[in-house]
Image (cartoon, rainbow, N blue to C red; front, side, top):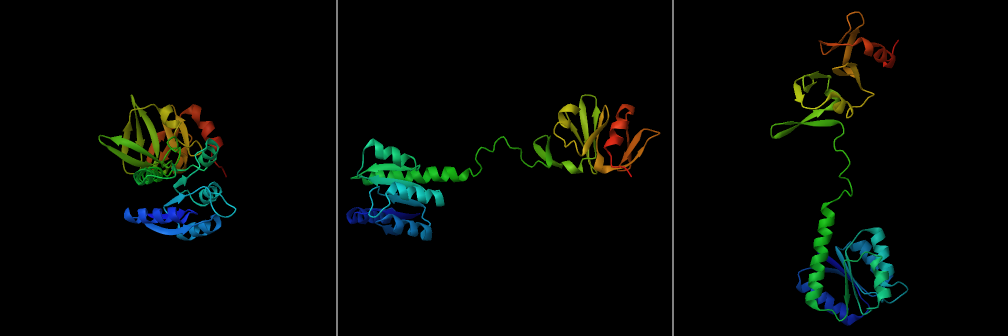
Length: 242
């Protein structure tokens, strides 16, 4: 792990540097004021920042933390002699991973760093926030067959038909049998591509080869499917005619 130290007291910065080295981490830089620290952060891209709040120069540690988080979300642990509530509340707005009061205890700092690493890792593993309700692979269904989920690409579905309490879903190569209603499946299909042509049939309009208006049949993949009389006009009106 690469650590950036931002501390204007040489005694504390030396102690921190020695302590981090003993833990087996690497110090990428030590800065006493905000602008230098910001440049070091941009060039070294550390995994963690240990930061005092009172710094030399115009920027406070809180100001610097805001700048850093605007560039890249990085764990920051404040180490400060300021224990008043107002400073703590201002520091909280930057989302720090820890807030330690000087003089710090080495064991406490070590635990704070370990917890910060653990928290950062758990946040990194979940890269999509609030995506649980978003459907995956919208161009395909996954059909359960025993202990497997079999992918069926929606654009390869030729037609769907009702058979007793089941529906059969046909592709060029095989048939899938599902225990659900035709209406439930229709709600998951794109109505600009799929159309109901019979009370028991839904077809993929892009797969239609021809329509026999006298015999009331639709040919798909060299197979004839029925065309209900009450569905005929609605189908024809929606087709692009020449």
